[in-house]
Image (tube, rainbow, N blue to C red):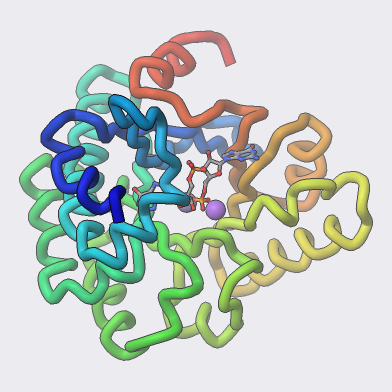
Length: 254
Ligand code: G
Ligand code: G
Ligand code: MN
Ligand code: NA
């Protein structure tokens, strides 16, 4: 594909960047972290969505160098914000199932954390439920190694993928991220609200924290707070922003 060719040099040409979206604990009111989200601004094609190019990167193996760049850039930013006095924000990084096929995957992450000086407790790795489809043994071992260093694990888009409760027992994530499908209409449609409450109850009973994605209104936020949800992320709080946009929000009144 054309995209594959364009992707090869995109990093060196400075076309790839990270945006960050705030995550807030709605029980304490504290901003607790950010999720790093990759952006590709092509000089002639314009912005290309990760929904479009991540699958191509996965097919071509480009996801390995791209994933390494994302991890390194996110780590540098985390340390920089700590240095500037914004507090120790947790950095959440999306990782593709394909990256787990890299024999050096865990080693590279630990190296990057050490090299940049990120406290592993401030790093969350987000994986999707599709990770469970193949190589459960190998993936579990890798996740265990990561967890043993203090890195946190999150299940992204929970409830829409290859969901199973057995999967939660096997991978024991620290955080469940409720997919925004469930949050959309939460306060209007009884069934969706009930589903969110059920997911929160699962998280609770398995000692996991629960974050709701795609929160766009105060009504949704209040519903989630009352339901005992720990954290939220979404346009109501902030869009994904470049680092300086995040800093402006963190400095401003909240
Ligand atoms: O931010 P946006 O809605 O455009 O993200 C679209 C999708 O791309 C989401 O599913 C998100 O998880 C994924 N994504 C964003 N950044 C990264 C990244 O750095 N690595 C991987 N593997 N996926 C990402
Ligand atoms: O799959 P993942 O959860 O990583 O994807 C996050 C995606 O959701 C990003 O592309 C981000 O831009 C998008 N997103 C974040 N907050 C909201 C929101 O409040 N509403 C909608 N519609 N999309 C959001
Ligand atoms: Mn995510
Ligand atoms: Na998600």
